[in-house]
Length: 284
Image (cartoon, rainbow, N blue to C red; front, top):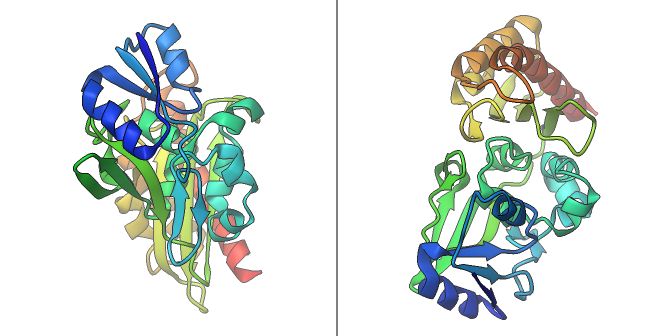
């Protein structure tokens, strides 16, 4: 296996063009090196991109733009992210331990395409769009279309994810990410749920975005549950209906962390708790 260090975006794209599907991008390495040691991947070359200038910047002019090499620790600590995307900041602080957060990147988390990725649900409710660059140009793709299946994405072998842009939290709205795990930290989610709600002055819901992880082959939005919330108030009957729609749309599996039935039982209560906390945040 070759180790190739890219000094620039152009250099990285040239290496991707050369190695294609046999090249593996390496930034923080928190997923790649574990998979390599387990024998789950065997690339011909590791293409190291951690030092490329400009790919870790965060800007907040209009939509929030986050460089793919921004670390989880950076997202968790950034004041603008905390104000414009509180669910993203919260989720970033729950990804593994502090060692993982210090070097793991948002781009790596997305491209790893884990069904249990903590960052994915908050990014989905923020309408995240990705910029993918190659030697022939750039294309922009919604995150919901980029995540295809477990460990499968729409990234082409010659492409590099360079940035993620997000819709900031509008006035009169709130969002939250809730995670259930066996421990309070450093644990993969049994279930993760992000919710962004917009409320009218009369307390009815005028906008709802809901996304989950660890209950399907990929993190995803749940439009059926979103539709059940629209026009409703934060009352038990409406939240129960939305919870049932969420359960009906989920397709979890049994694994070493939890059974599928346990995950399904968690979902209605988790949604109700998230909705009530969003309502409290809007009314403050």
